[in-house]
Each structure stands twice: as C-alpha cells, then as structure tokens.
Image (cartoon, rainbow over all chains, first blue to last red):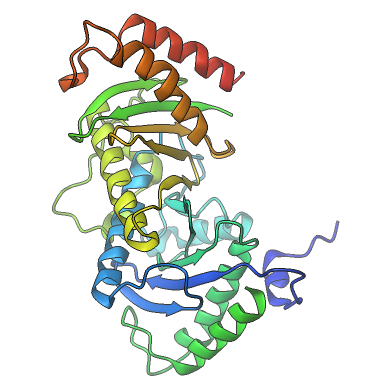
Length: 184
Length: 167
C-alpha cells in the first residue's frame, strides 16, 4: 500500500551489505553527442585518451539513436514526443506524472560485454549518463538516478555552468566520488 | 520469451541470412526515413515507433552498423579478448555471437530473455556448420546469401527455435 516512491529510496544512503564490485567510470553525454563529463573510479578497463573517449561518446550517441529505429516490436502506444511545442505541454505534463517510464526513450539501456556492463540513463532532456560497471554490480539504475540528482544539485544549480558545455565543478566531482565510493 | 528476428553477417559485412518471426504486418503509415541532413539531436523528438517500414535490407544494414560500432567500443574498452554479448533497449534485446572466422550471428528477442549466446553458438555449430558449410553444393562464400537458406538449415532453425522458445 505505501510502497516508497523511487526517488525517496534513492535518497536514502543505506550502507550496502557486501559489495566489493567495481564501478569503473561515469560518462555524461550532452544531447548533441558530446562528452561533457568523464570520471574514473576504479581501474579495470583500458585507459582511453580524451580523444578516444570523445569518439566513443559520439559513437554511442549515434548507436543509441539507431537502436531505437531497429526496434522490431511495436513500442508502447503511450509514447509522446517530448518537446513538440508549448501547446502540448499540458497533456505531456500530465503523462509524465502518470507514468514517467513510458516516456523514456527506448534506446540502449544496458549493454553487456564479457568484462563490463554499461548502463545508460537518458534524462527527459536527452542528456545521457553512462555508468561502466562490472557485470555483477547490483542497483546500477539506483546509482545512476542518484548521480542524476547530484548533477541537478551541483551542476545545474551552478551559476557559472554553461549548458551543454564540459562540466568543471569540484563539488560535483567530490559528491560523485563520495557517493560511488560508498555505494560501489 | 519471444524471438523477433535472426541475422547472419559474413566477414565481408554482408547480411547472408535473415529470418523473422511473429512480425506484425507493416503498418499502413508511410515509412519515415531519417533525413541524412537532419541532425541527430532533432530527430530525437520523433516518436520511437514512427520509423517502422524500413525495408529488410535497411534493417540489416542498421543492425550491422550498430553491432560493428559496439563491438569496436568493447574492444577498445575491455581489450582484444573482450567480447560484445548483448544490449537491451526498452523494446527489445539484441544478442550477439561472433565466430573465430568473423561470422556474426545476431538475434533480436523481447527484453525478458536471458543471455542467448549459447543458443547462437549452437545454431552455428549444429545447424550452420552441418547444413551450410558441409553442404557440397554450397559455395565457400555466400555473396547475397547463396547457399545459406537451404531447406535443411531452415527446418533445423525452425525446430530449434521452437524448442528454445516454447510458446
């Protein structure tokens, strides 16, 4: 009956039981496909130069778009274009409140290889948060949502931050570091 | 567990076999192709279901492009020994298996399906090798899919898939 909302669970910072699994790194890709943030937590994957990382971010952005168009099954009928015009914001707004998951773009969400797992969380404004973890890492979605909250708190509320530009914000760095160290 | 489609790509990046199951007939709406001039940011606003109606060849090319990029990404991040296994979107899941001869097997299923790497490997070992490679009438390479879609292979694939995905 009183199931806690998803946001409230992510607020809680319960100490994890036994998680020695690794979170490798976090990438944030802006809506144009540019890499705006990159933070490494644990060694384990190959070190890429910043140029390679930019290429990777762009590639992933493209693949993410393509993966939506090769969907074989008809997607849910409740998909609504996000930012059509101000006239439809009223209806779109109510749908968001009713069911936030149906509005999520259906691009790549999880992507697995033998040594790592990439979880992608796309916000409603089409910023992508990519978290590279070990394949067995639990609760990656919760971690990503919490990181999104930190992003909203420390990056979006930073008056010196330019939208869609690389994120240089020490407080965000520290908050993300602290959170991932505790959780991961 | 639902399987949507299955593709084989050869080492020349060509799609040599396509098979689809449980497909809805193409909707009456006109096919919408992404304009090559349009930027990627703007077509993020289109409805995800709106781009139905791509031809089979287009679909296969898009799938190949996707797995090619992802495979390269995996090799760069995880090293040469790393292999790309699968990805999942909100609508479907794509499973991938590559043989040492760079033959690529791809299967699209619904999102609840577990890892199908073994299944794809078995299709290669028990069906492809048996009925295509060992077929004396089939050419060594299969340009345009010549020799792959023979009767034995298709029958074997059908019965294998119905075993794996009991409906």
